[in-house]
Length: 309
Image (cartoon, rainbow, N blue to C red; front, side):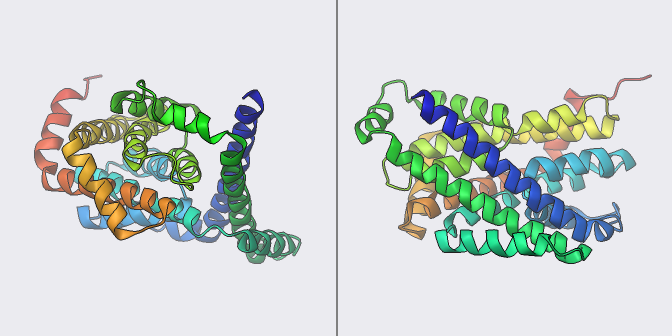
């Protein structure tokens, strides 16, 4: 069991390394364009920008941290910031979709092609090579996660799945703590997809782990907001409240079960079903907060008042 745990953390490190390579490449190619973005945008544009930025940076935490450290300091409106958060939560599911496209031949193609491009001294080709090689590294980590399934005896997995301790609340707490430790809900989703490959973990259990993972990802954003101006801190608080309240709203089985059934209806592939669960949950929560944005902002500003200096 010790060997399995250490191997899991090894593959997590490889996965995060691949994400970092892709982020460096994409940021190098697009940063000059990102600097030209003006903050005077509508909530709809905030939603699209959050979606776009997260798909580029391959991390909702990274895009929200960018919002906090750059945009929030020049006092963007709260409706724009909250819409950005909604878009970021939806955009992070794009990375999860990469897991479904993972294929051993693509992995080797990306690794070899990316490595050769990195060796070329031209700046733009090097950056593109980083993106391609990083994608190959991510695929290699995902293949590693899938191999772990065969290292754990099936009866052991079945025992854990059927355990009385696997209550919805316990699964959500596990997802939250695990994501806080590794600081990536994407990795948590990827591991769930790998272990659901054989269909041994019920989708409803995956659903509750994902609820907790969404809360756990707030930890990184909160750390970034410390000692930042009020506009940055209240954006981080909004992110926390959105994920906590969203999990509470979606926690009852009468909400979770239909989302699971929709995912099963949309796809017969276990990994794709996990992606559809994440997508449908984030869209549901996003719609709720978009519709009730005004009362949410009012409550948020009452709870987190700006203290006079």
